[in-house]
Length: 289
Image (tube, rainbow, N blue to C red; front, side, top):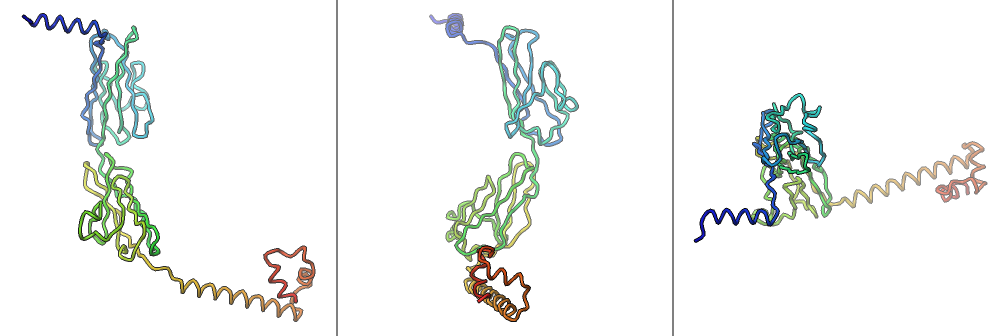
């Protein structure tokens, strides 16, 4: 008959056969904490490490920069005025800031080189701020238009939603019949709104909202984007006016040269090809003849 003592014996046999160690470290945290509030990070470890193990706390921020919070049993300078080390392994923040967002790891070791580590993410709740939006005011029909929206303060990182003329734009325009003719692409994580080939239908007042779980959504100031056809008539007219001005200038210089109103240095420039600026050679030929 298979008794409970037999089961324990089997477990002990498997423990010895596999070499599984009892050294373990666990970290507990409130995880989500509002900015400027207090919180604890608790590090618990198994008795296998002995009565006086070495405790170190490390921090890796959202940009993967690493720093010690506790090193060689002592708090490091950046944390000494607002963090308390208690019961030998636990951290108590008097208040957290948005810079405390990131991963914390508690590393426990002893003189026999046994090592264990526990990790936890701390998310500091910070409401979004009014995002910075970049919205072009004029776009040529058929050209690409890119609108951007970003908030550097919100934590957790905000998601973004765009509005046109006060109406919320769906992330996927094909999901709603009212927007089936729109061709924009929206990224709610980066805040980018792109029109690959802008049309006059895309003209309107645009603004963006930053949204997270820490507080009310915030929006940027609305800006009107106007999509216009390329003004070819205006371009042609501008070129003609420029050519007329150049012709008038050349005629004026030619007339002044013929009448002898120009200084003698100008006559030398006309006679000596080697000192004529290449860009002006053709104009000088007309003037000097």
